[in-house]
Image 1 (cartoon, rainbow, N blue to C red):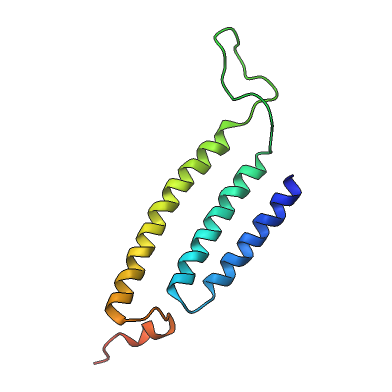
Image 2 (image 1 turned 180 degrees about the vertical axis):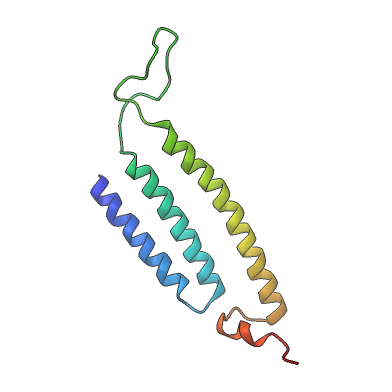
Amino acid sequence: METLLAFVIGLMFACGVYCLLRRSLVRLAIGIILISQAANLLVLTSAGIRLGKAPIIDSSESVLAQNTADPLPQALVLTAIVIGFGLIAFVLALIHQTHSSLGHDDINSLNKTDESP
């Protein structure tokens, strides 16, 4: 299962980098989304996929059992997802403002918007 996820993560990173290298601001946002989600999958996969009990310690126990999932990578990924949503909302607001000001989303024409003295 981890091998399949490694290929999926690599494909997502490759598609994200490809989208970042395009000339459209919308594809730039899609590339950022793909790379952030691939990084989240990478953190979860690097922790290992375990099918076992939930990481909850009963009142009669003092330590976690051996077959439990590690809660730290799950908490890190949950935090990264929330931060990623904030970043994507900010990028989409910038794209909307750029498109409403210029009328297009071509990245190469953005350097021609400055007035020269």
